Image 1 (tube, rainbow, N blue to C red):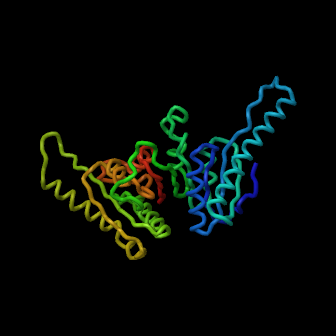
Image 2: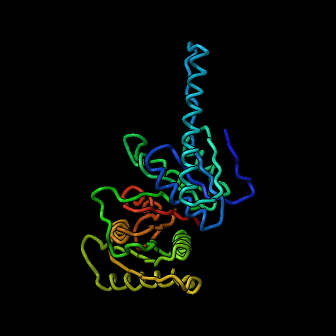
Image 3: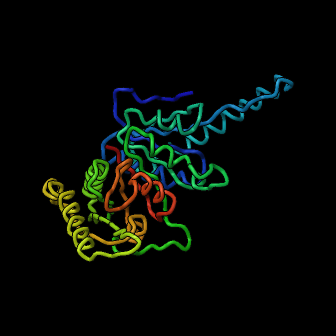
Length: 298
């Protein structure tokens, strides 16, 4: 069932809710994003009516379906109220979609400028397996996706880029999309931006050639400089720090982003210096980063 659907021609910000505690962070992010972009917010809840045994009486069947309807309505109406509490006057609509959760969330993002998800139970491997809802959605959504979260107990909350936007850079097309999205977010929020290019020298089993290391270092510095060229002129209000480090990309980005406002990475890019698919880096960060992660699309 769908209530007050957004017109297909209008752009919007979408947020997936499931009634869990992670909804709060996702709704807050999504409401702020919609407000900053002057767009309506669409709240999406994926739920399927219960499968009723053929032997169930009609009275019990009606009761079960009524309970299902009441529960789904409570989830979307509660989410709507919380979004409007974050941004009074925000245009909010909601819909309940039946079907497979990843497929329906991806479909709900058709025409969206941004899709926001919570983390919470989606990262509990005992419930959703190693490939969580968030990791699958970010791999297939037609728009940028933010997986909103706050640090859990024991996770670091201070690092080199506290309160800033952090973006991973590797020179690929996906990285270019990430850099653009990161500058846009930093500018909208009045925050600084830290761009991180991480690389790791992989010598053969017998030799370490210092000349190779130096060349990798120089080439990596060029990639970082070229990736930022033009964006600093387009967004002169954004304070930019460029970091070029010899370290595994996942480790480097997790350490840099501790306490950051947002960590941005690309999807399906390939970083030669990183030595691994940027897509795999983004999936690892979705599981292990202690801050909200945005996965940008080419």
